[in-house]
Image 1 (cartoon, rainbow over the protein chains, first blue to last red):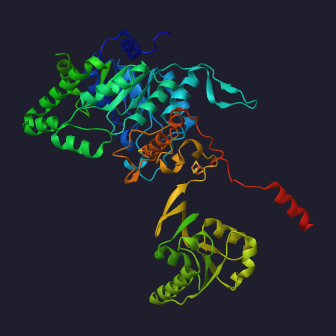
Image 2 (tube, rainbow over the protein chains, first blue to last red):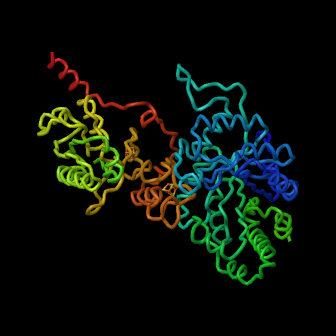
Image 3 (cartoon, protein in one colour):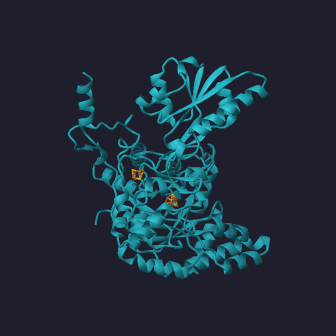
Length: 302
Length: 229
Ligand code: SF4
Ligand code: SF4
């Protein structure tokens, strides 16, 4: 097996239960607070921190810029890359650029549709899909790109990148089989780790993990902090493949306003404790409540 | 077939504002079948335009005509009206018809009365739905006869995204997730291996990335040329 290319890869190989975090670049140039928060709350606790890529198709500063600033601040980034906005020329170019800047983890995603965001008139690209993006990364790693020269031979690169490549899956989709097949394709295309959509149903997650056992790739279970009962109900209504069970909604409803954050942290901790034994780590999505990460980790390890 | 919808009246009225004498020209092809751009609609529209002009205190001479197809030269011989005697023609054929007519009558402004939308099937009375995007490289053989380019909002080729919600697409809760349909159909056909196979990125030169696409039937094109000599 070749040398790990990132701390995230080493940590997952070492078999320790890994935590990763996530930040979203701002809509604007004022990025310092986000980086500051990541350093204060995530550094040293998360093996790596995802930087979202125009998440939910709402225009924001670039993921690459956020990753570079995290690197400079001593936090290992995971570059999220969606297929919605760039064709294969731009994706490959940005991958080379990311490697040049020192970024070593990439998460290949399809990306929410343009019509769901704040520029619904824009062109949805999807020149490559997530499987195609993973194949493109592997191609670059092998020293060629997706194009061909006049003789029909693959174009040679002057220096090739290496990445630790991840992908996403929705383990609790109502019909999970097509998700699993797609995941198998992503792994066949080169995915080395998996980050899941939010999971609130440990039993369904365990069943999913048994189904994908043969893939032998580390899986980080997705934990999205629920800030209120209203948010939980919204997720049930509107977020595909996410089911927040009644017991969580009840606990959030019963909690007083001051206690809500504490209860939310406890719920995350409890979920991770229940799923810890069947996966390799947890990907924490706090939606701006980064300061809760230390307590979530403590609760998960209790 | 090709589906086209009539442009909003306001837009048509504004388009025709500089003209006093216009011909509304219907087409007997697809747009007659989808009941938007045939002879009847041409007659109706001509009347509506005269009325709209009168209400705005202007005079507009609006006649109508219709030919079998506006995308073929020979049918223009059957025109009852001569386009050259009009200030402008409002064509209610699809975009191909409008442009082709412009080439045949370079001295007359040919204006589009329709928005051409998609390749459709007639799925219910008065309902046409998009089925094909003319991608130039048909994949229906391995997708259970359901087009992922059209029926998946992202035109994905390797399977469903994470946006499937209760069988619907994330883009539109009224629309079924195309990839879920493909999965179900392949499963029913015992062809899930077609889903499992990795599909390479598409060649968009065959789609719309390579300029104007042409179909040339060599034998026919050659025999016509020698026949013309
Ligand atoms: S794959 Fe292409 S040609 Fe075939 S139905 Fe879909 S869009 Fe049309
Ligand atoms: S939900 Fe289904 S149809 Fe919609 S974009 Fe995703 S895979 Fe395509």
